[in-house]
Length: 485
Image (spheres, rainbow, N blue to C red):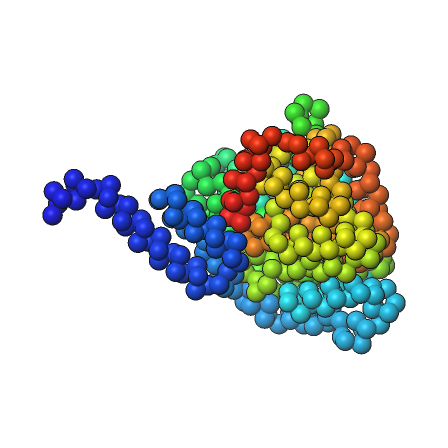
């Protein structure tokens, strides 16, 4: 028997592979997931022995149905429950807002309030920060002024020039008595052992999100925490597209100009942002952190900017951010301006954009001219034809790499956050966005979008249709992988 196995080891392995592949296919069919995604997995499992099983293992698990961690431990704590109840708008209040301010955008408010328990907060100050150099200047000033606690959660943290400056500042604040909690993604981040030791020796509570054995080889093949959150003393918050790394700061010696967008918030929305941080902290630290009122000081805010904090990921029942983007597109009356570094959408978003444009709405998409990912570049390109068919204007940003993730609709709705327009952000990664219902902020973001178009090239559909067959083949292959990215 042993001799037979040794002589036929390759055939035995192939048989085992296809037995496992058949089991995986049956599991996919019983789960009734998206047919396109199911077909992609079946093709990979059938035509790529062993590799197909690896891809299925890394990408194919349904984490939304089998939650990675339980949000209820935090959401059900007395202080959080009371705050959420106090902020949640009643039906009569929402009806009043519908007639006075939001009109049909009230549907978005109700959607998030019901599916994500994300209350609409009406008293907030919102500052849009362009590029890393502006974001980090404000952030460092706020960190220096912190008195009680600093909560930081990031996908990418590196101890390069800007990273070391911020991490050293966190050490100084911890030594001075400020409670500092830091959570980083184990795949996205890269901090030296020396810096990690300094953080812990200084009193910084520091944890990695879902550690992996070889993060440098893992790449994108995991459910990762893509959020960028800072909460200072429970009164100031940051979120957006800018990670903590020199790549996001336009230093004179940087090879590529990095165009990005971030938000600084004050007001009632910090309650929700703080809760989202604490939910994740409870998971990464392995502790049941007792939530006290000191995390949520009642600091009055004079500005009246309406904000909801939308979170989504494998821990949520619904793809909340994708759903609010879809609803914003389908309720648009005048225009939809989208900026994203990666455009690999699902069919719902494609159809919504096509219908909007064909209905006479001005739909424009801004994407990078040069991508930082070969697969993402050609997967994005594979979707452009369907946009051109519906007369959607597509622009390629040529000044550098545009990494901003923003949408503005009708001078009343906009969103800024961590969510890319792709499968991974919609369904796999942990993401967070600020959803803003305000004319001034929306018009400011609209002006920023139009200013970015001055550094972009409007694509010509006729010229695009003449691209080489080689390019089209690359697109077709990468599009096949798109549901798995």
